[in-house]
Length: 354
Image (tube, rainbow, N blue to C red; front, side, top):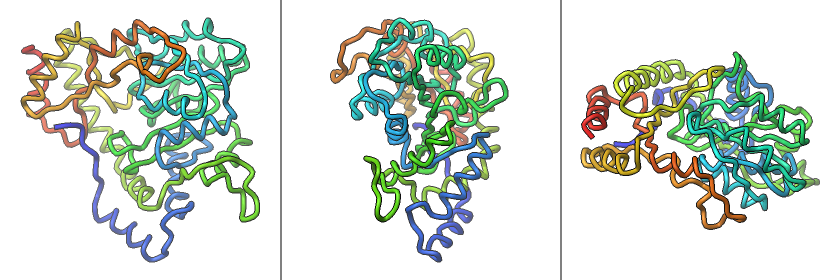
């Protein structure tokens, strides 16, 4: 059993599908996409939100919107798309090692890596845990750098009572089916500079401004109406989703304290209960737990593994010792609203027995 996709009320989704069939508008910035953009912006407390087809393309659009070139200082402990999206856009990732407790990029490692070729810092709010955003933004300002936050896991996270998405130049979200909030596939850009919004909208539609003008090199990154319909349904049920996840999170936390190591949360930010990562004493211990759970048809994920500084296609080669160390010892335990209590206790007992 793996993490499961949350499926909202079927009848409500069918009503949206009927609406799509009636108006015949399936894609290209349809009415449901527009409605979802407005509702999400209000719900999250942000001013400029643009829906796209997935989180990876959101990162790519962010780099193009900001005209990023040269080097990017980023984290080696993240989903591979954080790095691959840089490489596919001709930007060289330079890894700053992570903090062993927060699992986020260690801001103390960033400044020494900045060169005249550096143009952007790309941190990840790992498992929704807020980075030290004030320190990172201060470094960026001192060196005239852009900041793109990979906030794929940070849906509805607050930092000092404000949306974490309002930090940096652009933040991106992923709305993949396994996320806290999803649109089947999908993502979003949150852009803090109003003057960049129009450019980003051109870029997600092949760079087209109008029928006679294509001023930018763009791509096809649009969200369709069926995905937006799913998002509208899931958004209606977000409070229920969060309540159920929080309950499961607290059970893991209570039963596994002093058994495994937990990620240390930023004291200024709110958790969103989207993941439950645990760190073991060694990779040997992790593999024993993984094997025992797999034999019971339970499948925790080695997330994130391997450390991205080990990827063959990354140049120059770097060694981030803490990221490599953590990536070999961390598992994300199953957590989703429909997780049954007996299954969760089985997971906990298996870990304790190992």
